[in-house]
Image (cartoon, rainbow, N blue to C red; front, top):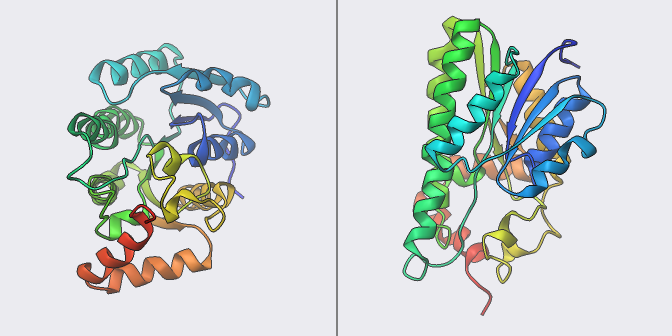
Length: 262
């Protein structure tokens, strides 16, 4: 198992809860100090939850340029090399596109896309100059299928998947690796927060353990793999299926889980 050096540092966005917290926890267990980023006051408790390493909590809104800039200033004030960056910030919004609120969708686009790109610009330039570093980009298996009733979320994850694979090729010559994590449905607050409690996705009974998903992501990151499916054997089979089936079939299949119960 690969571990961090004595002074290794990992930047983890979305680290308050869910898969992203488990990523921060898993990296801390491997010896990395953590800069943990979140939008709510839950991020302030991260040092208590990861007591074995140095933790710097940063509460900012990464959907805004000001939030990204504040985060980067906080990181630079530490005066430390950045060894790992896990870019995970994201949210979803359930419901038919005809019914959802445009402002909510624009905020999701900013958080899942624009904010990720702004932060990635900072991270990639720093790591290229260092000629050292590993980047984990959390996408989703939703990147591989149309996502009716999550109609904006899926395309944002497809963007990050493609973006990550392009960055991987660009950054090879600088000694920087990029890995894309594609989680399947995971037992977290994610779908509840998206307002999907009255759908199949609203139940966590059948989903992947976030510890498993995060562990697979970290293992792939430290091994320098280009991507990994986050989940159990059933999830891996589902990813293969989604690479082969036509979009019309995948859309109908996804809708059976994302549409509200009648």
